[in-house]
Image (cartoon, rainbow, N blue to C red; front, side):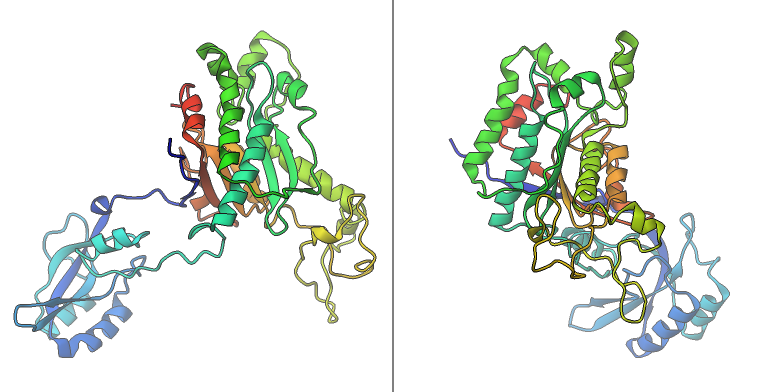
Length: 418
């Protein structure tokens, strides 16, 4: 039996659009003499710049039989319901008359291409520019074999954290510092009382838990066995089991409250509890660099010789002891300060987070989010919404889905996640 290869899929900020279904807009264009091309482009860019259409090239070049080229230029935008050039702006009309042009209406691509395939399809209408993603976040353009195994190792730890007794599965979150390959904090859902009873030992602050061995395909199989153990019960048990995942059922706590009176808190999803654990870790390691410094206006930053505050720097975890003390060779230096929220960290989740959790991770400046299973009804990072593509936010992270072995997906497929 062939083993399924390890896969990590990047979830782009915007949903992919089939190349043949890309939105278009209408423009006025005209055949021009090649000797007038430079002059016309300069004048048109001044009087009728192509606002929000910077991906379009102003000139289209076609080759006739015999090798003689023809040049066409975009004059200006046209209204969607226009069929003639009667409403062309006066300045453009003056250019048309001066150069004896024959305007016509054509369609061009409305948005810049997100892939080479989209770009090739756009150029069939009118030439556009294509700029491949240049995001400096690791993984956008692919993972090395070593990084792939490391991602699966952390995901394995996350899935193991999500297991509990009585066929109950909750969402789990693990925050990792990728620069030192260490788990910073981990947590499970704590929305209802049954979460607290089974997970109070699991929710912890893992200051210096290092994964010494990088996993192989055998670890992926172990991960499959861990989840398969949950399928020992009946189908009804499985349905009930996954109903406890907070991000999949954001209002499940309210339904339970109608029948029982558990100790509950509707906001304590796994990602939120993990953020709280990360903050508690910072307070433990840096007891004097929190509220006191902020109240004095220092805010944990370094000051230069000129008195201007410099950029906040991240702490080197390898130089910090578990009890919060620094090594002797770094003691008294200005190189180590309290990290700013979760800047530069990754988070691993069993299920795709809901809007509340995804927004909390924006505020925490998380760098990358990895999840194993989609959230078809309340997912914020690909299934329903794509918060990572919201331009109005002041921080954006990269999102990846970790494809697990088929044995795991078959178990999940029997639940109501279909």
